[in-house]
Image 1: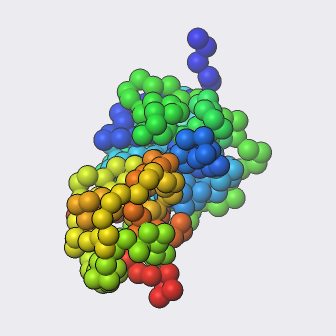
Image 2 (image 1 turned 180 degrees about the horizontal axis):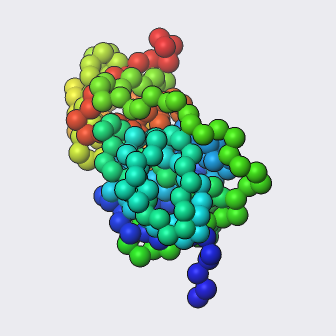
Amino acid sequence: MTRPTRRLEVLAAGPLATVQDLGRPGLAALGVGLSGAADTASLRLANRLLGNDEGAAALEATLGGLEVRAHGGMFMAVTGAPAAMTIEGTPVGHASVCWVPNGARVRLEPPGSGLRSYLAVRGGIGVDRVLGSRSTDTLAGLGPEPLSPGRQLPVGRPPAGDPLVDRAPVAPPTTGPVRLRVRLGPREDWFDGDSLRALLAEPWEVTSESDRVGMRLSGPVLRRSRDGELPSEGMTLGALQVPPSGRPTLFLADHPVTGGYPVIAVVLSRDVPLAAQARPGQRIHFTSREGS
């Protein structure tokens, strides 16, 4: 097989690195989840810096450790969790456009805050689409496999002209408490008044049982006001699903499309990227949309 002229060669993948774009919207009725970048705001920013379409595919690296070699010179940018980026050992700025010459090694170190960084290239990652998207869905097994050393990733044709912006002054993800706005329901009537108050009044801690599917939270036990179980129903990004243990799970990009446990609330879609950058051990505070 002939290798593409412009490509990235994966030298190291860190804890988890995948190809992600904006996912597969509109296919839930067919049993296909959204997937896509866990932090869509950071993916969009990286692509805007490079002059790409906002939905171009990039690399999502969890806790750094990603290292690639550029075959063919290309512009790159890193956004999201501020993983220090080096080109042949020389540091470059975060959320800035940099030129990577042919044959150069690019490495992302573990970030000081946040969880997921986005390494984008001008022209986008050009792996084959599956059901309209280049994203890796870790739950359903759709799209390209998670990255591993030796993987060759084609780079698409760059847009006309050069990037117009060289840097975006964005604040890094916080290491402190994360505030997420929620809309109660659709099954808040399954929980007693004390549980509804606790959801919004008490802090929650992100546990180590967290991945691209969702994050389990530690905190007060959310007690039900009724017995029995729900029939399976559709799930959505940002849903706070509560199993019989009373410990909620916040669904992220690779969440299942259906579930049988009641959803007490849903995080607003524009706050989901904040949740996607929360690390195990960080505190989360939920606030009602009406009170924001």
